[in-house]
Length: 297
Image (cartoon, rainbow, N blue to C red; front, side):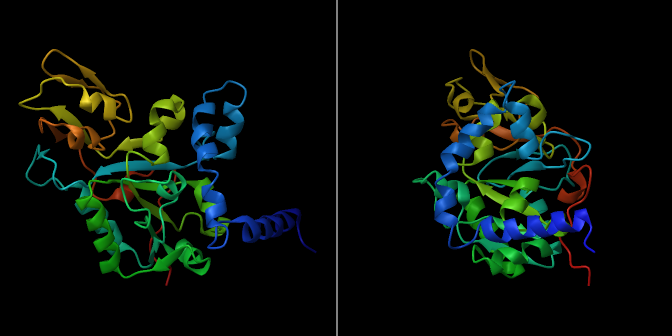
């Protein structure tokens, strides 16, 4: 006799197999991007907000562990070090890719596709690590790649000035058709452009409890020589963390260290500084659980 829990799992699996993103329905789902984009702002609504947060597995910090860490991988930026032994953000991403035993690259970026991006290539897809991502290749939305191919993809993103986000988002795992048993066997390395990324576009609009789930790994922006307080950095900051002075800027603790402000500064007067001790591995930053990117074999 099948238990109620077993029946629930069968129903969930059937729904997932039918409605999860695949090669055939990809374009249909990307048409919903404006609605998904707009729903972020609604999370602050006192009536709809709690429901949306619950649906997105962002409600309860004791059991909903969706979270993300922002890494500046743009090699053109200036990094001011506190110590000689500090590990740079792009090195940390390279390291976690090398540690993984299975990896895929998405055929297309959902955010850039949904927003019809004109600034960056839509076929520069995110890198997904862990055994749970095998289903993405099976569903035709990603391709299995070698470690070198994944590192090359990261290098392309770095050369374009994109921002890396190491994420684990429960609702995304479900939407991609990853079974509940394998949800933790996943780490997303999103290669984000400031014009289309759901997070970078909406951090300012998120309620504080949701925004706090996304943070820097220990780097932040700082004003350097040559700042004329033109305001380009403040306008580009996804967190609204920059305020202008007469000839300099002030960066608040809201800074997530994405480096977008430094990229947009016409005077090259912003650099990235280490604001907190850097942990050894990206996976060390996750709370509540540790994403598994290695095979059990």
